Image (cartoon, rainbow, N blue to C red):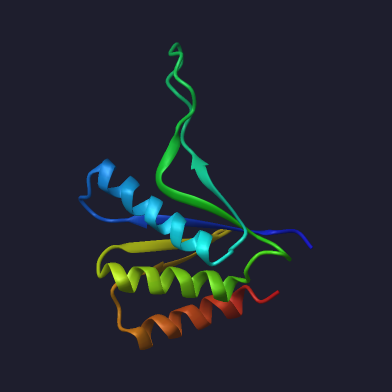
Amino acid sequence: MEPTAVTLVLDDAGADPEYLEEQLQLLIAALGEGDVGHIERVPGPPPPEGTRAGTGVELGALLIGLGGAGATLPVLLGLVRDWLGRRGSGTIRVKIGEDELELGNASRAVQQRVLDDFLRRHEG
């Protein structure tokens, strides 16, 4: 079975890059405790032509590889929702292919309905 590629994008409107990076590192640590599979940073755009800089990473974005040995999608989404709840602000966009879900400060009941719909679309 091919791993499912899930992109997480932390969006904290108006946050400076250092704060966003700090929050992303906290999210990585939380996901690491949940054994969600392979976690990597999303590569950024290539550097301008003629420069010697290497390729950076996209600010606030992670790529999660969910496979047989890793967590399932419901576990990943539960970890993300709980992490956001502890933070009390910001949003995380969850993308699988072209399908995108945004988790933010909606009520738990509304978030659960949105999560259930998203999970139904991606049942394995």
